Each structure stands twice: as C-alpha cells, then as structure tokens.
Image (cartoon, rainbow, N blue to C red; front, side, top):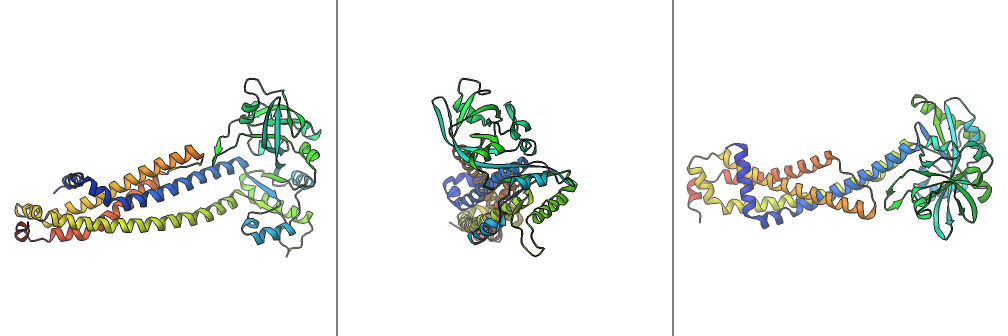
Length: 408
C-alpha cells in the first residue's frame, strides 16, 4: 500500500465519522491553541520590546536613578530609594563632555499635563522633556515642522513638539505649526508634529507633548532625577563606553571600590534578559498546560482508534484475505491516527491565529505568530497521533483474518 493510498483511506474514515472525529480532537485542539495564543502574545511583545530597544538609539544605553535589578522586589526598590541619588543635569554635562568612547549624552524627563487649544482640552497628556540631541539619539522623527534646536534648549524657550494624535484632536481642521497651545496653563508655540508611532497594549503612543528639558525643569522644578541617554562612538567601543560612564558616575559620587552603584545603567541586553526571564517562565507554564492537554488528547485518540479497530474487524479480515499484509494494515491505522491529530493541530493553530488577531485588533496588544512555532505545533500534534495509534494499529495488524471474518 502506498503512502497516498493510506492517507486517502485515513481521511475517508475521518470524514465518515465527523462528529466523533471532532470530539476526539478537542484535547489536541485546545492544547495547540493554548500554546500558540501564548506564543503569539509573547512574540508580539518581544517584537514591541525590540522596537523600543531600537528606538533607544544606535549603540545607546541610559543612566538613571534606578537599575532594572532595583525593580525585582519591593525590598530592593525601597533600599534603592534610600541609597540612590538623583541623576542631574551636571551628570549629563559631565558625560557629554567626557570624550573617550562616549560620543554624546542627552537628558530627558517626563510627567503628565493638561493641554488646551481654544475650547478643546486634553487631560493627563504625556509630557516629555528632552534636550535637543535626544532626537538624534533616539531617532525621533518630525512628520511636520521640526524638533527643538540647541538655542531653544539653552534659552528655555516655550516651544513644543507634539504627537500626531494630539495634533489631530486639537487642530482637526487647521495646521498646528506656529499655533499657541496651553500646557498646564502656560502658552507654548507648536514647532513640530511627530510621525505616527501607533499603539501598544491598547495605549496610544501618539498622544504626547514634548518641550525642552531646560524649560521643563524651570517650570516644574530642578529637584528631580532625569534619565541620560548615552551613545558610544561605535559598536566596537560600546562596552568601553559603558564602563567609562559607570566609572565617571562612581567618581562623581565618591563611591569606594567596595560600594555598590547608587545609580542604574540600563542597556538593551539588560532589558532582553529581564524580558526572557519573565516570559521564559510563562512559556514553560504554557507548554506544561499544553502537554497535559496533548496527553489527554493522545489517550482519547488511542481509545477511539481501538474502538475503530473493533468496529472494522470484519473489514480488516476481508482486506487480509485478499492479500493485504500486516504492514499495510499497520500503515493504514497509523496514517489515520496521525492524520486525525494533525488535523486537530491545524484547527488549533487556526483558532489561535484568529484569537490572536481579535486580541490585537480589539485591545491593541501586539501579536506575532512565527512560522517555526506553527511547524512545531503541527509536528508535535502529528507525533502525538502517531504514538497514540501504534498500539491500535499493531492490534489491527495482528488480527487473524479467519477470526476477523467471523466477526459480526
């Protein structure tokens, strides 16, 4: 018996008992759908994090009050609050003027503000504050107008750069460039509108206003910690620039060699390690749940195949009496159990894909389904079917044709 003939017989048998086949596959369908949905969400989040890391800038890292490790527990964060000092403009200037393997350094901070134009008001809009060079470091692009220039930063000009959604809501029928808006009651001139960033996890990234950092600190107070974006001169000097920044910050804070850093340096590598630690655990848990579902599904497939062998005993006897070999019968039933599980895997992948798309569209949560995971899901589900069908197929192949023909 050829492979294609065995496959044809398998699908004929599956289609002749549609409801029973579907109920048999529920365990495989739920198991595969669960892991694919989880993987889609995790991969989508990973892609989002990678995009944000890319937006940090080429060869860039940040110096800030807290490190990623400080957020690992409430105790560590409380200890860091007591130990860590604010990162200041003087720290930024020291890094910027350091030279060596450090190419540039820019400062930034953030808050929330109420924005108004005419009779239109936006409450709790993200207020970003940066130095002029952060636009180049973090690849901030203007769709219209421009970003701040150095003279505006130095003179604390009341100018702003706004997100495209902010512009659409405040200036639905007019050009925002050159218009005056109020940010927390103060008049600012709009000089640029950013390119569209889209949304993530249901939250828009285009509802913001940016002002020069010097202006922000003069209005909201200088007694606050800023974040410093630092770039190295090249990819090859990245690690050296990282160590130079750490050494400079430790010297400025007069730390002894045995003392722990009282500031944080955040790198793309650290962000990736945190992400992998969090979602690696979730993936393992999802695979564990899926394994239980697939084991249950495999047991159900084995039981149904045993029932099928019993129901088709006479058919097997007829086939053997006209020349079918044990290998042909074995191949037929293995093809049926494998095809059954593979079909369940395909249905599970399809359901998971549709759920992921609905979540992405409805909640704005990024999703992505790598082909490798689809292939793995189909391979594992077919493997479950193959293993589950071994005993029923062996039992069918070993039937005595004369005894089988006597079956009712």
